[in-house]
Image (cartoon, rainbow, N blue to C red; front, side, top):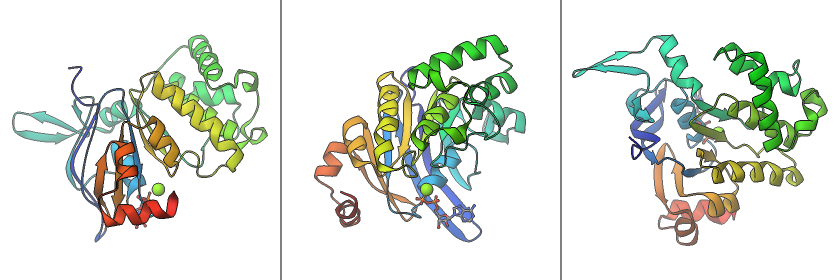
Length: 255
Ligand code: ADP
Ligand code: MG
């Protein structure tokens, strides 16, 4: 089981009406790896992450997370759509961090973090609080447990959002441009937390324009454009030596 990839996306197709946003996306991410996804705006990066997390349904292809086919149960040759409850169970194992933090504004930092474990997983409050403090410690914000999100900087809010996702003990973490909304001086503290998480062995898919992060932390890099993966490989190799003209042109703009 341990050599089953954590994520295996096989020829994923996603349409919005007649607009085919993901044309044929195949991506494999092994356990403990950090896959970085780059590409121009509108290329389908967020849509791909949202498909992995069941925030969007797919129109073609198959997706496995941790060896489990997502959204379907297989009996013999036949596939049956999962019930909403089964889909929720699969989603609970996948953490997601958005560009816009999305913390609950009327809850303290601590309340934000214990909400899902207590409400969705039925974790006892005392245990959830203990875990929350461990996670806050990990992101350097234990002293902010009682603060409300509006009293935190963007970088601090994003670190809380990461702690909140981790509180569900995910086996996979998805990051959708987690530093794009931050003032430049706050980007580093969030990337440092993500780097620590990578070093702890978390499997991560990171959509980012932070090429330095991709080069330093990424195990693989996927360049996406127009709903297809144009080029992929070792980040250092792809970044130093992009083979496709579209990759070269994109990198010349962001590097
Ligand atoms: P990226 O994250 O790479 O910027 P997105 O995945 O957000 O790209 O979007 C890819 C394309 O899909 C864009 O053309 C966008 O307008 C379209 N799109 C995304 N979400 C929806 C939606 N819910 N309905 C219709 N079109 C959408
Ligand atoms: Mg996006």
